[in-house]
Image 1 (cartoon, rainbow, N blue to C red):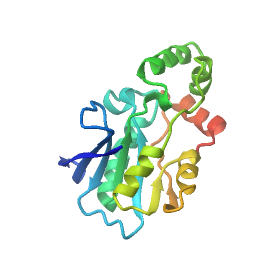
Image 2: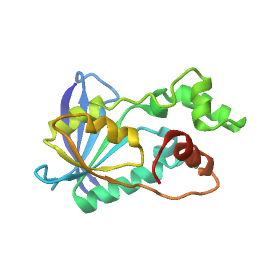
Image 3: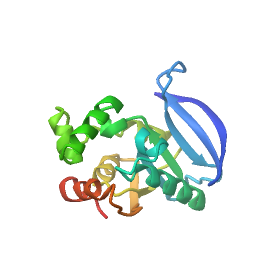
Image 4: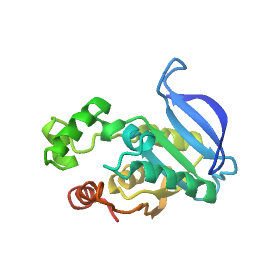
Length: 193
């Protein structure tokens, strides 16, 4: 894994650079870091580690809170000169095809966790080694982690050269479409709201 390319990314939220990370330059779906142009790694940096959610991030699915979380993360990263790391681990690491199969099971009455388990996967198969590599590459050692997921905090706290100085909550609200999803994450997966 290494940084393959960096480019300017002017978006409505503010002035960012986008950095692509992959094993080689032929990778078609690299992991990304969206870094505010004025990010200062000598201070605690607001960091969001966001796992890809095509249905939520791109199409605005109401089943989850992923799209609103990504939008809010970019807004906060612009305000606080932070970083959003975008990892390609769709559906908590089970991939888009299996995630859509899980959607069908959810429509039939299962919750998001039970659907993944029914398909033969762990409840959350995501890994954070790439995010740790990216943080180190960016020179970030002190982190204000924008998350509700205690597993992300735990993954970073185990690293000797990274310090999570604060967990910053990221709650974008309940509505009829995502209420069961969020309650499952809270009650069965320990997410903090």
